[in-house]
Image 1 (cartoon, rainbow, N blue to C red):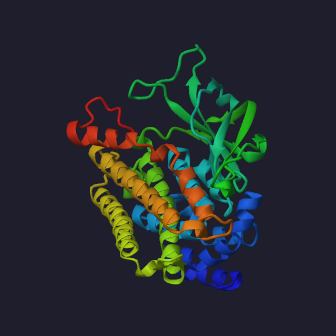
Image 2 (tube, one colour; image 1 turned 90 degrees about the vertical axis):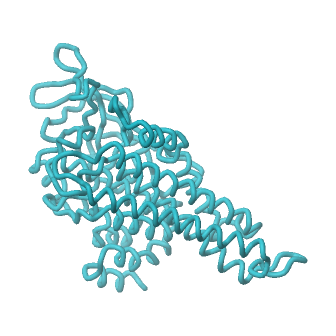
Image 3 (cartoon, rainbow, N blue to C red; image 1 turned 135 degrees about the vertical axis):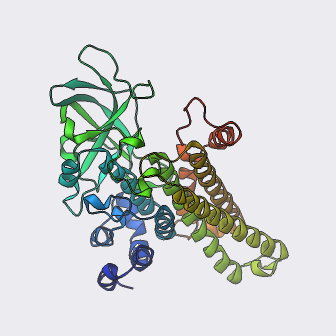
Length: 396
């Protein structure tokens, strides 16, 4: 399907069908995306018109407010075509969740632009100084995925009150406040020189003594403060962020396994015959299919169960959040294991630039180093499943 045909179909299709419609156009420019670390035109416009950047944005601000399992499937589909684009789609959607934690008019100011995207780096040591009407902030943030396509950026900070005390949240801990400002008010730091996920351009940015109005700030750490009360926003940001990472991992692994299945039918190893005729390969491919399919299906089931008990006031409880975290971690690890098998089994066919394996292998192993992929999540989830969360420290 060419770009024009895909564009004409987008408004009429459901979100997953939109992703499938534009996927080939994205795949066709995957090399350029990696080389330039940016999404070219008209493919960037295609992504905007598909509304894939607005899946988790509240309806109150013009978003689609999709169920998390639909969101998962869309991110997975995009990752089959390009891991970097899928990553930036999920990050833009994760950032869009802040719209429910800032004043409605501020959110509408940002998202009245149909191409508006927010990008930010994770919290670090920087502090915002409370000032009349807002905050003054100096610092730099890194790992800001999709910043080249973004129109706004955010700075996560603890807050220093006029008397020098740290502002505390209702849990008695230093609050983390997100300050939003137009990207042009920041200075870019071009530091994304990595093994994989090059197309995300997850670079840094800095500001010096920047004033940010109160109305363009909010805190994501307390879901009871959210304005939008549908079931989607009972999910914590951490739960939806982990769901996005799992979607990227599952899509990359699926693309690699599908490519290996085609290769196995065609490739004959020296002295051993076709890969597809070897019993050990047949058994391993079957195990990979089962592992990938089971991990994805279980994550969907867990998300649906959490949706069924979602409350319009209180966020999901620790047990539901722990189950989401567990299912996401399991899916990510299962996907990495499948990718490792495929890369090894494909032999020298996997090592060449431009093969169906090489970039995806680099991408999924870059993903595997991200905080959402760490082994410690299994311990944290197991602790909650066994003992609950009496001290309220599980972040989900």
